[in-house]
Amino acid sequence: MSFTVAIVGRPNVGKSTLFNRLVGKRLALVDDTPGVTRDRREGEARIADLAFRAIDTAGLEEGDADTLQGRMFAQTSRAVAAADVVLLVVDARAGVTAVDRHFAELLRRDADKVVLVANKCEGRVGQQGLLDAFSLGLGDPVPLSAMEGHGLADLYEALRPVAEAHAAGSTAGQAEPEEEKRGRPAGLLHLAIVGRPNVGKSTLANGLIGEERLLTGPEPGLTRDAVPLDWSYDGVPIRLVDTAGLRRRSKATGKLEGMSARDTTRAVRYAEVVLLVLDGIEGLNKQDLAIGRHVVEEGRALIVAVNKWDAVRDRRAALAAVNERLEQSLPQARGVPVVTISALESDGLDRLMAAVFGCHERWNRRLPTGPLNRWLGEVEGHHPPPMAGGRRVRLRYITQIKARPPTFALFSNRPSEIHESYLRYLTNALREDFDLGGVPIRIRPRGGKNPYVAAKE
Image (cartoon, rainbow, N blue to C red; front, side, top):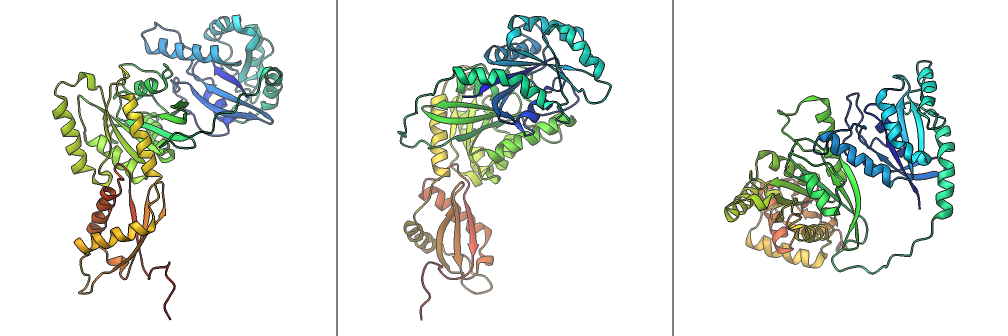
């Protein structure tokens, strides 16, 4: 079992840069703007043979409990309490500030698990700040350059005693039962939450995991980067990713929002099932549809979660409007599940997770070739493909070539002349007849005869 390391410090001292260096990936957004990180982010980190879990935290800024700074400070305090080691990072180039001294004093009660890190020590500029760091009274500072990767050997030596003590005190966990529940995925399920700003995505994530893990509040755009959370629902391990709200490009401002949007897009690409969260009071708008189309184009299973349902007055009309708009404007994901929820009240979350498991099963489904070809004969008989250049287009064979999402090869004598509208007809028929609602379906026309039948002499 690995130990946990929390990285803390005032804003803009290089915490996220150090986090990315330790995990070996650019998981956290990095920018010169102070306060980029708001939610704490976790990742599997390594220095040589030391493996541990690293936590990147928001910059230490105190404030009233109901302010954004106060809520960020509370999140960081939880990370410190849960960690085995706390890396207090100071900026050696800027020198030790009054804010550094204040928070060093707050951490002094846990001084036995605090490692002082003087970042940005590259060159002569940082040497004076390194010497100043001794005045904090938290032991010898570890000189480091997270940007250049210098000083990791010294950090290794500082963490090694903790790793050895943790290894000696840990006990082997009991093996988890191998019994699988019907309809549940066997491995890790990747689930992403997307939507416009301020529709309740982080509140939903907190409700699902049963913990105030992410910042929430009335301020739009609180979440700036995609935050992965590992948890378990009904015995199924899930990696849940909360993402930044996506606005229309015409309304997006600044480099940070662009970085957040790219992070959200990447989260969708690596997800298996995506929850598109709507504001139930506002209903489904153009930006929601644009996000939904992107999810489908990426080949992910889609579920629409209509949030704030407790505040909707005419629920029947609101739900009918959402379903009608989806049917008209998102036909490529016809049959997408629509689940009404109240994330704030944790209402409807069990129904939402049942829809997630159902969509995941359909997204992974493989259809037998025999029933597929019998189905093809029936749908072609009811509605044959249009003729091309006065010649008949014959559909010879269909087979599923992959799942995740379901993808089919359709063999024909004239594959390039199968009209797009006819492929849509086949797609909709597949979705309806084989219960593939909410799942993208891809049909690839191919030439040649049935490759599974030997050529006749």
